[in-house]
Length: 176
Image 1: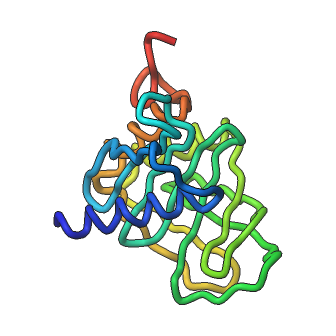
Image 2 (image 1 turned 30 degrees about the vertical axis):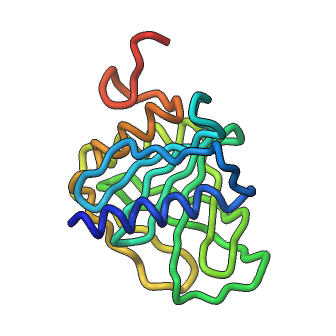
């Protein structure tokens, strides 16, 4: 269990830092771990507030990342070998909710799609009430993702990212 958590933290740290060079003063701060879910925050210095927040399901490679530019959903699959400029959609089904997000960018083994704030609130609200979700993209087999333990990690992620909750529950901050 500890090894899986440590692996998740390393995966999340690597994914969060894809966009820039690391400096000695930077810090990756673990926020929450529960089930196969891990939430982390990147801080440009030990005393600075978080500039990037991330939550990942280490079993499935599904991640959510938030920074000053918005919130993204990411699918990571180490067996992919994607060309640049992949086009398509990421489909997420949680209970009766179904959402599609246009792929905006990719690496050789990851696709990313921007989510609007309203979509993020709706999706995380649905995740809080469900036991699993299904994520698919392109012709790849759908990924069934357990949501066991996700609420603790996604609440930490939402709080870090400043994403409001659809109710006065997880992710809300009474001091804002």
